[in-house]
Length: 472
Image 1: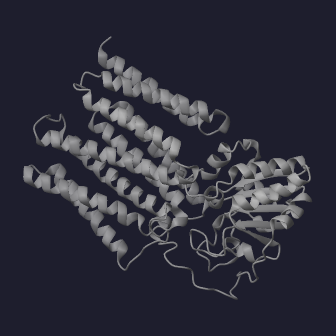
Image 2: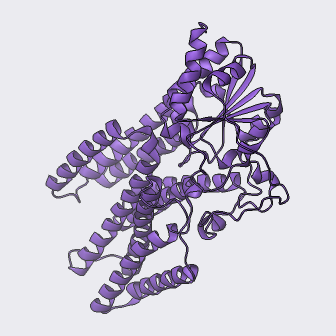
Image 3: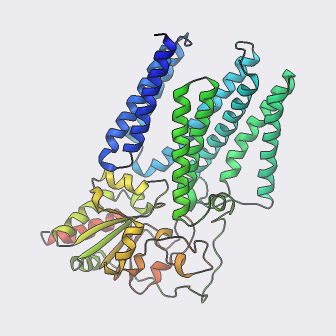
């Protein structure tokens, strides 16, 4: 059996492990094994690629492996769970950058005469696509990182004629790509390459600019998909079958997740990308149809304990505020105390809660909250009127009743967790400002809502201390 058959057989095995691992990641009970299987598949792919006869020098490969391992371990140990969205955005960006570098390296090899492609048109086309998608993914992810880390404003940034400018740049990249593929003159090819490379990097930045912070989970998912598509195109460049398969898996799963989250917000992907949602605070609509009137009513930790001590049905609705305060462990402790006190506790998870897909699930899993206690929005809403208490921890848009009642609200029509239907709602919030998306939450003004101000972790520690004082 020749070496090519062995290599491709190993790649098929690695691809099968990727697919099985991805399937197992869909359930908490099998997620760790799925992650391990996928890792084994990637190890097989890397080892086989390094043993391929096309690899003639290993020095820089070893340097890269060592450096990457050190950086990866350092990030795994030092990056807090609150920074996971930023970390995911950064990794997406590096994935796009890696694909761009592969495309640029292939261009330089061909231009220098090191390699002569078997099919020049196909190679030029996939090189163009790799650099275009990789460049957009890289700078778009960096911009998303800056928004998530609040180094830049979380609001959408728009200006007059923005879509026209972006459209013209996109057309220019397409024209440059066509010229790059069909032109025969080396100088013309070089110029076209430079034009679409630079424009792809600019486009990544300008395409994310008009997207508000509240839509960052969708953006992260979309950029993850683009990084996979760029990797797939890079796989065609270097004729690596397993990279093509892995890229397709990442690309398609990211697109599916993006579609799911857009559906959860009752908005199209085009609306997320081009509407400029959150570019400015919404106009005041006091007295308008569906607008809730009322005042904020604070509550103390002691009074919160009194309400919870009498509750028998409790639902906890986490949001980014839980991540910021690192409150997931104290939340689990409170849930356990409530259960010992005779209450039934559920955790209601909205698909776009937090700042990346699955953000709340990751935090609660880290705190060892039983997966069986996590319920989706569609499952908890029908029983919400039976809940004695709904505890909202830093969530904003996903529980905002304006989505169902205020036609002037930008989020009108978005499916929400109906926390307002619970008998009592306790909202934990750091202050009286708006959430990351810039929208006022009308839930806070309802007669059955009380505001527990302060750091969520410290506030809940106060409630837990009250339970402990009774020996619960």
